Amino acid sequence: MAVLGILKYPHPILKKRSEAVSRIDEEVKKLIQDMRETMYEASGIGLAACQIGVSRRVIVLDVSPMDPQHSFFALINPEIIAEEGEIDHEEGCLSVPDCLEKVKRKEKVCVRGLSPEGMEMEIKGEGILAIALQHEIDHTNGILILDRVSRLKREIYRNKLKKEKRKEEKL
Ligand code: NI
Image (cartoon, rainbow, N blue to C red; front, side, top):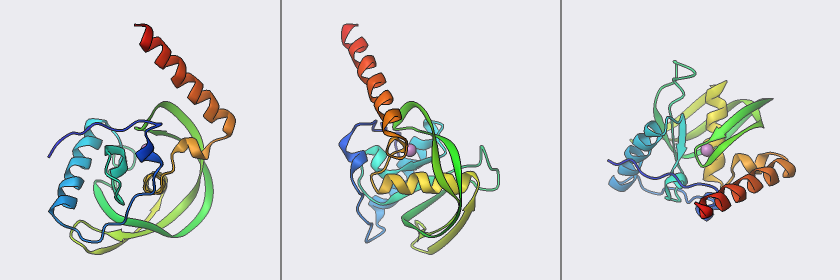
């Protein structure tokens, strides 16, 4: 098990659609452990495999800091099978540092996927669990919060990054 580095925007892997997992082997189980440790180390409530450079459809979540009813779980090949309602929610992302943006989300979702033991799971989520599920499933499809805000906000963020990079180069 290891804490791994989290890729940051605009790393190309974050833009790619991740590949489905066809067999849950030891490698996938180790990946989930690494994702779990990396998420906790970064004080995140969710992480997708692509964020540590592995382009496979695996997500981990632990929203218990905000909703004590839902602690750690991992989902393999997650997909939204039902959704309901709409809300705006302010979100951040470990791969998009210093960015908090209001994102349009579904209020409730039902997600289907496999547990690390290969059991088919259906998770009904609302509140922060629904938001986090949508956010992490977005990652598996190569979508970041920056893709869900206005072009103007995206430009502002890009310019901020450019400025910071220039500052670093001068130091
Ligand atoms: Ni994220």
